[in-house]
Image (cartoon, rainbow, N blue to C red; front, side):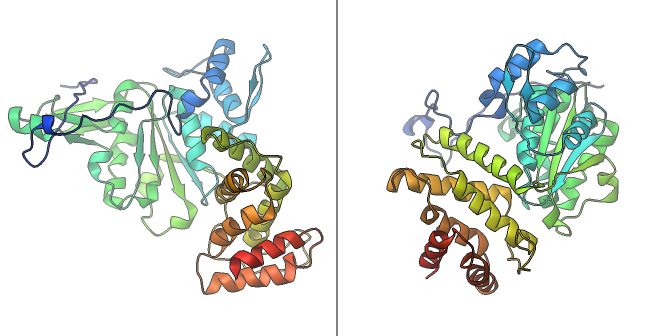
Length: 390
């Protein structure tokens, strides 16, 4: 017998034989005090405006049409004047292919080096398609099979035996039953035997429950987005059988320095608002300097193409540049005059570049002395980097 629905039960446990009354109750979250709202919450107004203006065909259980999903990711202005902010700055075709994949029965694999916004794109795709980006499996070396399939409420299991009430559905099982989008982050971090539990789900669109002699079949609208890191090849390489179940979309690093500066600026502003950082004066010059340093060391070549450089062991990704600038903004706001300066970002850059104290420090010192020291307008940055590296 096939069943496509299940009941979720809430349960609590106490440990050590101590009565629950002896413990403080689980605290309720403070109203409105969410540090990082989910994408569907942060951009609820934009999603609502797109839904109201969207008159194009929508796949089963999609909140928006593929055109509207792409517009949500890439940004634009609607007929009523509503401005949709870009969530991803990159080639339009990449987003269109990703969205189209989700409209088929093929799962989507977002592949790229660290810091290319794979998780960010995954979250916003799920928010736009299903209105819920929280059906998430975070891949690690310790991710168990139950995280992808299902687990058991052992109190219920021992009391009443195997039943749907005792079953604890995984995010993937819930997405299958409800026709929604599930997410698996860092797929190549997951052990190979656990990865392969996805094969039946993606090929047969069913998840067997042998303990009950039942199964959960996916309903229209179900699909899965996975992310994987280019640098993790060979860690837990995807089997050819599993890779065939995915349509792979490679997210590149920003093509130009201007694009990367734009990305960093937008994300730093968003993060600053969420952290209630005091408003700081325009820091575009320092952001561009951070991006320039990262791009030159990453590419092994100065911007003018005249000097070849050694690259450090780290990735120096856009995400790391965002972190460096955000930390610098906090320093400038709380311990400075509110103006983002070289001294505010120097320590962050040093920490991002020098991951291997032996090899990377040599690379950094050589870059400082041969490039930064001789560059017009960079004397303050050179002195700040020398001070934090002393």
